[in-house]
Image (cartoon, rainbow, N blue to C red):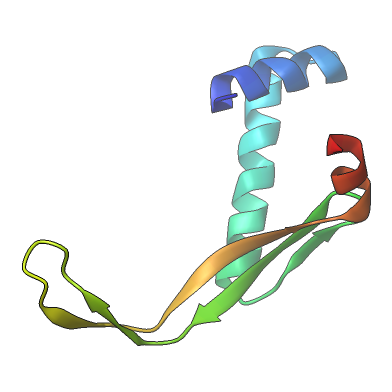
Length: 90
C-alpha cells in the first residue's frame, strides 16, 4: 500500500474527503517526525512505538574495491510493534 492508497483507506474508514484525509495523514507523519527529531519517542498503545536508536561507528567494506572503510555513527528511526498489532497480524 502506498501513501495515496493509505489516504483513500483513511478517507473511507473515517468518512472524510480525500483532501481532509491527506491533511490528517500528513499531520500525523509530521508530528511523529518532529518528535523523533527532538529525541522523544511516540507510543501508540496497542499499535507500537516509534523511537530513535543510536548506531555506533563500524568498519565496512566497499563491495566494488574490497577496500575497508569507516562507517560513521548515526541515529536511525525504529519501530517496535505493540502486542495488539502483532496479534492481529498473526
